[in-house]
Image (cartoon, rainbow, N blue to C red; front, side, top):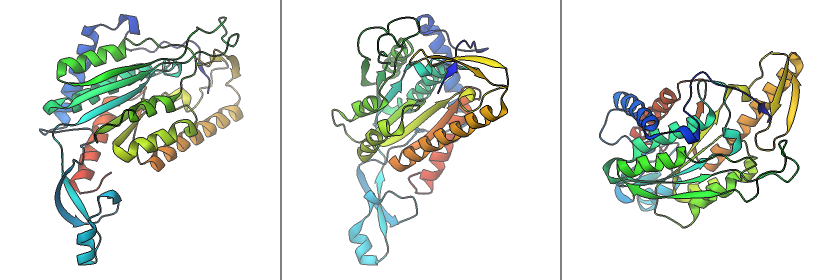
Length: 330
């Protein structure tokens, strides 16, 4: 889907080269105040891990993980039961951070890449407590074929993956955020499936895996890797969306450019039929993304550049904790 060529949002984080420790410190302070003020508790993880230590059994409820079925108790009582587990206090969380060229876009208060960095900061704040470890794999774009880039030949060299090892402690988490924020976005298409599959290698102990992306790549590219990831880990998919990716404004002739290929088009947005077709196609695209994530068994959080993303995250965490309290897995 094409994006507007030149958009300057009213408020955003500085560009990657300008992001300093002070900027990230202010962002983390904002995250801390909001999350600590609205999410009380000693252990407020985003997706609290079910743990590995066996606990008591209880009757099965719709939404429970069938992998936790307690078959001996089910056989004795003739009623389906699941085995509760004691939550681990030391979890390992891995982030798959997509920083492909399509993320360097935004028409709201933030660029999409700024929301990605901010979401990573919130996740780090929620998971770094109690000795928990957090690591990340950051993916950048792969170059387009020579001659396709409107400014000339595409930059040489393959797309890159930066692996940041999982470490415990706030200082290490701040270093991880600085590395994510300082990653340069490269032009070209990236392979989200390869980025997600990197979290499967090498195999790790059960934990939490978070994929942060706009998921604009075809679902068949990343759907299977997320399903594989879900076999061993609790998976959260954070989808970052800009309002112009959902509908076009009526602003006459609008030059739009695809940041991943450099292809430039002029769109007549005054045409109501075109705007309607665009909105219908965008809605179908987002529905397909949601359906693929639901099939994969991943929790799904959508953040927008024109809304209070932190409040949306707080509501999501609160809903997750409420569902866990009732004994369901979602």
